Image (tube, rainbow over all chains, first blue to last red):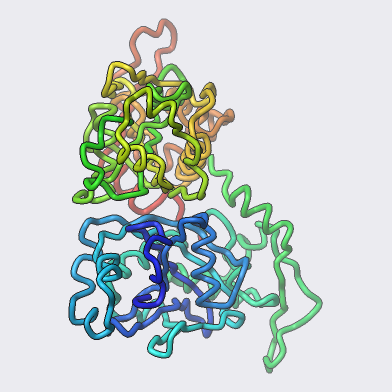
Amino acid sequence: MLNSVLKDSEKYQPGLSIDCVIFGFYDNQLKVLLIKTAYSDQWGLPGGFIPKDEDLDLAANSVLFKRTGLEGIFLRQFGTFGAVKRNKGHFNDGIFDALDTPLEERNWYLQRFITIGYYALVDFLEAVPQRKKDTEIVEWIDHKAVPDLILDHQNILDKALETLRMELNLMPVGYNLLPEKFTIPELQKLYETILDRKLDRRNFLRKITAIGILTKLDEKKSNVAHKAPNLYSFDKEKYEEVVKNGLHQGW
Amino acid sequence: MLNSVLKDSEKYQPGLSIDCVIFGFYDNQLKVLLIKTAYSDQWGLPGGFIPKDEDLDLAANSVLFKRTGLEGIFLRQFGTFGAVKRNKGHFNDGIFDALDTPLEERNWYLQRFITIGYYALVDFLEAVPQRKKDTEIVEWIDHKAVPDLILDHQNILDKALETLRMELNLMPVGYNLLPEKFTIPELQKLYETILDRKLDRRNFLRKITAIGILTKLDEKKSNVAHKAPNLYSFDKEKYEEVVKNGLHQGW
């Protein structure tokens, strides 16, 4: 973000940022969109500041749109991170000098930042990773192969994943991460990847069917030589209903 | 808070506050600790600012301690509220004039505030509602009889309750809200009060027993004439284990 947003530091809420954990599912991997900027050798989460005249959720949507080109996608706040020293020492004079950063902007970056974490579930094939500057690298990285991250971003990522796993027990999530048509084994693989463990095929089929959100299509997966599995789609209306009311009546 | 915290507005993170939804269970009611201050006729949630040299969670603990006298109690962040207009128009010159508020402090209160919500579960009989000034009123109010609240505090309260209901499906919560010894009907009543619906006695007994966190004591409830019910306590170790791992293996 350095040197690009602060024409006028008065434009943003001071000491506050947004960080987005953007998940996509592809090649049986749960991937995270990460960014490497000119000011660090390490990767980090895409983020941004909060314009004074923008609602918080809208500002989060902007970050997402700028990094994926997607609008109206599943985005959920999952935690606010506020350790005193979380961004202490992240920037130094060397970086500022190299980038010829004006004093006011240096001070902006050196203040204590509390950051609000959002996670997003996107259709991998629809999202187009976007950089703002030539010096940036934006890439999907398997969440199991994430390198060292800047600041407390690993902590933020861990917490997002923990939330996603928890929410898997509360609501269906496949809708946002899978293409429109999919097979049950593909759906199971998504769940296994998020939960990081194998699931029993019969149990999964029984449970996922019982939710009543799947529509069996009159179509089979193509390009499969032998025993082509059936294709399914989500019944959007029922899906939304379950998201709203929760999976478990529990007690 | 007005006129009491801002000896020096430089001391706090600008534009950021904390609001605490403090729940207690008594007389078969889920109660919320609310405050009425000199600057408003309406009730509001107890809150505070974030000292620049204090971690966010610590600042939330301070609010809780100041309002209940309790330390080390269950406290959980559940959401950050950041609509642009959430505190717009809340203060006006009339209030500031009446309280003889200096200009710098007026400006502090007039800035846009994003607030971080925490909810706490406390033992009603242990918590001692505390006011900071004579002009304040601090009271436990049944969550079903909460009057009009300031700002977006009703929204914050609703969200806290929604989170609590959800977490009831994920982990045991009674430990923080009940006295050390309790009966199964008392525990069931707590769950029914939070969920706002009746539960089947046998089902509840079966489910709560299956979790394996209850210790049956060799003691009966006194002051009950007929068929005195057994007292139970939580097995703290197992309880913590279930809180950590979650109630449902789910998938």
